[in-house]
Length: 348
Image (cartoon, rainbow, N blue to C red; front, side, top):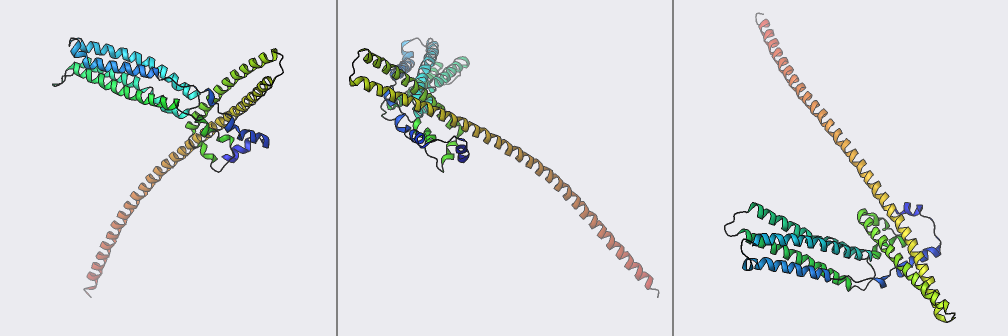
């Protein structure tokens, strides 16, 4: 697999290989990483806490006939608020993914959807309790609704606490994006373990897509930097001052343009790798389909051979019975012949 891929790739000069091997130290743009705010998650936790407190003190503040209606109405309002907050949390996770922190986005994308799922299940449970009104000797309808409210709030707050913890860990990071650690391997020198990169095709495609999105964000950031540096350079040129800042800005602009070209080349390389991985996955799927078809044919052939073997076994059993009957008949004839011979020889 590795030899085939390298055979199809165009040859590169030593200078180009050196440029791509050095990209690990040049490509990560960690300086423009933005911290994610935890204010929204904290506000949502306060809403959940207020909801739980309302469920706990409702029988002591409101009339017992109003408690079920009040709790159901508050639960529907909480479901709407949770849906709005989930969209905000998903956008936060998407921004983390675009910053290149793939592992954090993978951990958070499932967590941010759990509060809405818990709230939806709680609303469904409250609806069933309200409609069916189960008769439990030691629990009233209001008590059942309060238990559902408290359970729903505790579970949602637990998952939001985990989400806040991950966001705090992300904000305190001081390292390059983790998406670069596993997917810069196409730019490294080949090894005997290179084929293992295609062991898990779905995860590799997802990671490469995340890396392409990260590089697109880098290109956007670099474009803004180039425009800013061009404006600064034009300001220095209008002053007609031949001092060194103008030379430094020109050097910085050239370095940024070189970095932009390097990132564009890397994105093209990764797109090629992605297409190759998808083609390998499709080839493996077709091979698995062929193996399954062959296996089904073997199963059908085995069934046919078993049927033939059963038929021959029954024929052999019938033949053995016929031979046994024939043997007994021969023995009976021999006894009759011997008796006749004895009877014929006795008068003599």
